[in-house]
Length: 199
Length: 130
Image (cartoon, rainbow over all chains, first blue to last red; front, side, top):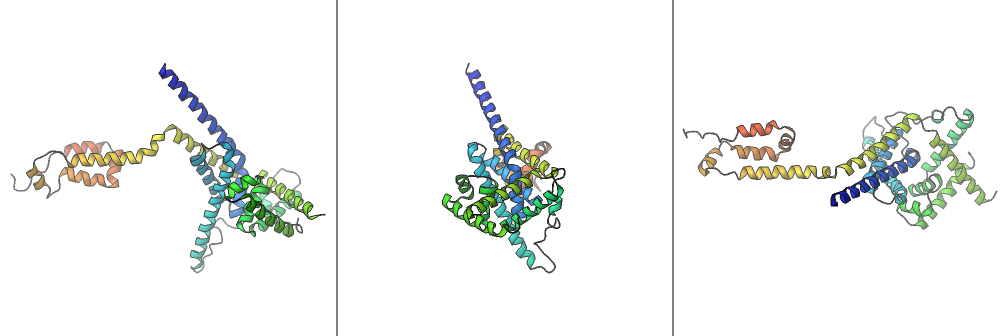
């Protein structure tokens, strides 16, 4: 009797954990592409961006899989931005080290030149010329975003591009909602001034 | 156009472009993202199925330490032990071996280690004893 109760309990537990694994799978599938593009815009390197996203997925799965799923999105983006920041710090250190060596340029990636916007255009979609224009407009957006202070970049990316609300953006950035609003307003103001002409 | 409308247009356009760039990701990138997701989920599944694995290194170290203590305190003739210590007793050798990481690897991966250990039970005959 006690054995069957214990088995029932174990079965129910197994079912619950399987369900939570499926929920986590769905969550990660829903954010992975956008997270990758966010990381790619920040580090400007596809392989590095993939590594950062994979690291964020692993950390979320290891550390926070048991947390309520409503908390995952801000947590995931917080982890993602920590990964981006770590990468940027390593990159800065590497630049300084290689800067001392003659004939070395650490700011040039081993993978070659930056991605050509034309190559990024997906085939088979509407008009190639429209796609090219969209790709160029995206390049302008990325360039303008890259010139913003880090906190403004984060606020704009999470609020506008990823669509998080103010509370979740604040949780992801680890700051107050008031700070999010301030950073977002400044970012939007700067981007509007820079992009209105080229869009 | 008022400022508010222009800001809204900036946001709308930025979101539209970002969505298009996400939709235009190539197959290889999508495949790698998919693999990354499965790796993360596999890790969770692995940890759930075998929580004892997290304690494995500590358990191995504790077992080795315990074995070393047992061998060190093995009963034996004190004269023999002091005489044998000049050349190194089997117990001392084992303790030394087990104290190294190589010793842990041998003990955990090579069962023949124990067979070899059995052949080394007899202390060597001290010089001049016979």
